[in-house]
Length: 294
Ligand code: SAM
Image (cartoon, rainbow, N blue to C red; front, side):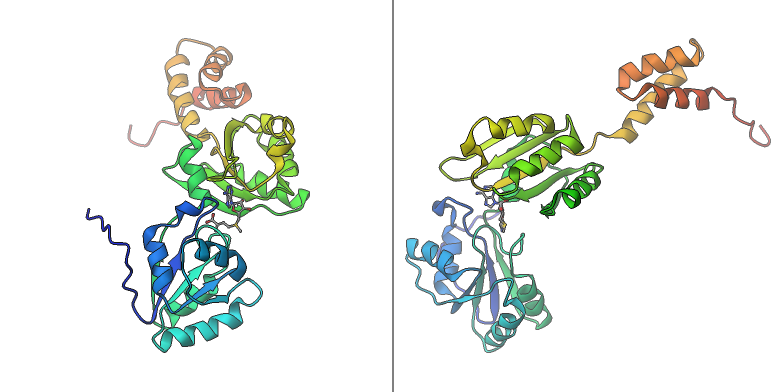
């Protein structure tokens, strides 16, 4: 792998650069991101005032134009014309990676449809940052964005996500975190959940606790309800693998023990519920039809 240390950007005309910006710590803007932002003709920003603060901090004076959820379709046409006229453009959001629970999808899709090159300038993303410190399986994961704001819909979505075997990442705001954790406890019980708040900022914190214990953690200090949150929910236990193991053990025990006793032993060893294992034992204990020609 070759690593390029050069932070001066040679931006190309007609290209859209999708640039990740910090999720808190201003120092997390990469030298390359800074150079690209300084070199493009125009920066499309979710909020020009928010991005203005970041750009001034880094001495970048490129003009800004607004691209947010309320004007995305309209602003996109004008930006595509600029790209077709040979301008280089950058897209940024208020924090982190554009398009990740942030505006930009319409612009990127239109740029590709118009045959313009789209180039990533990668960097911070709260979801990936939280996953990287969670201590939960990260080989595969599901990013589920924001949960529905209202209780009933949120619980229904959580019940659906509770069946997901991969780690699940969700975003949550300070207004809803207390209600969300109460629902999480109700739906997920002892399932481990990482709560990360204020990542990269002065009062950043992360805890990995059973869902049932998170509300108590939040209530223990009023400051903990403030800021921005990411939750990483451990995937559903691998029920299928437990069943395979239960079947293997039952096959060894059933010739020696009555079905009920074998089921009790196997339930204790695998953590599966006794009635489930007993039913499996009865099925395994039933002699199978001899196959034709055997
Ligand atoms: N595009 C951003 C990214 O790449 O992570 C996400 C934008 S989304 C509108 C904002 C949400 O991201 C917040 O409500 C919070 O859930 C999460 N978030 C952003 N910054 C965060 C931080 N510093 N610490 C924890 N969560 C953060």
